[in-house]
Length: 257
Image 1 (cartoon, rainbow, N blue to C red):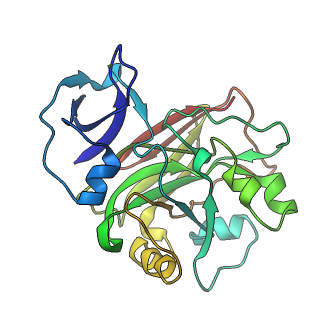
Image 2 (tube, rainbow, N blue to C red):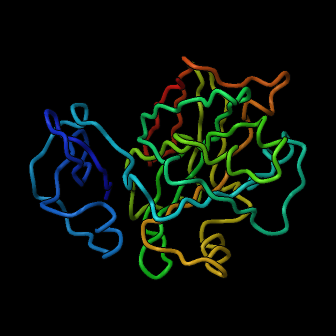
């Protein structure tokens, strides 16, 4: 099942729906978070809209928590000149970082080195289960990341987490292709099978100290090919277009403004 939050053509209020092919079918009531928290997997029976005509929002516009994992692909660790962590490297993004799959990502005026990071995202379900998967861009301010010991401003700034386009349940995400194109140029091309710490390990590790509420999301790390790892580095600027796709999960298409 593919769970989406959308605004219908001519509407103004968000609705929860099930994506089926090129349509989205509305649920009678409740939100995507309600369904994740309750474990309800019954199909939608409401009005159907062409997917091309609706406005997709982040599936859970304000997740209870946004956990992120750094340095979780060996090739990305190498390109950044970092050391492989012995345990998962966990950090947080802030609530206002969550934006729709189409963004836009708004470059803060203080940032000079804006970068993309394609990531597999999973959503927490009841009892610390994994309810489903989605696509995310862990947009990062490399200049702040390298000059500030805490990554709150570098990773958690407003609009730094476009994600979606929906939550896919009942899928095996252990070996999916992950790609990023910037202005039509392929930059990243990896596979989730290369993750050092797998989703189930991340759930167990985070839950050792943190309450994982249903609807919380976890970004699992990025493959190699980020702008900071290129020679010379190639960072994002207003007007750039980023397309991130994960096999079987959908595509993010967002701009930088």
